[in-house]
Length: 171
Image (cartoon, rainbow, N blue to C red):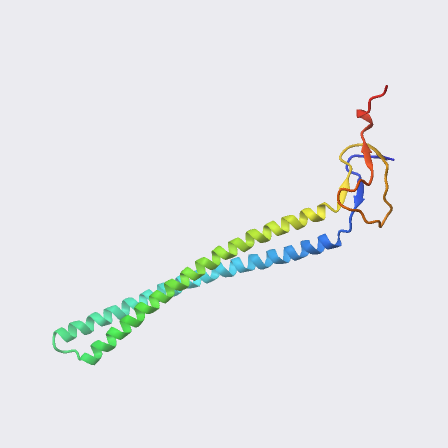
């Protein structure tokens, strides 16, 4: 029979493709949430580093005061030792905060990769849903149809032929 351009010719069971699309959308939501969490983790790590550096600066100042007191003969060895330990501990905390930033930056990179993969999966799933319906690419006549509703077809199986009458040569 005659068909118009864009008319549906064949519909495949779309349920599996639609389920895959729903899963891809959920994965995309997860990837977006992880990216937001990674961004927040980096901000917190940077804030922590700033606070830790401020604390280390105060500990260094206290150590310098104890050294000055010791040099003038007023300070005690235990007070100097305590200030040295506090400064050393603060320096270690700064290093730990820098490591937290590096981990947060790596998490952002991983989240970006996961997001890119989720976008690809979503695009592929949407394409698979769109491919569950075959439409006529031009006005024509459909002939040689071998299908009945509900029949199973194999890939590359000819199920009919769409002919463009305008391209037929009449002898």
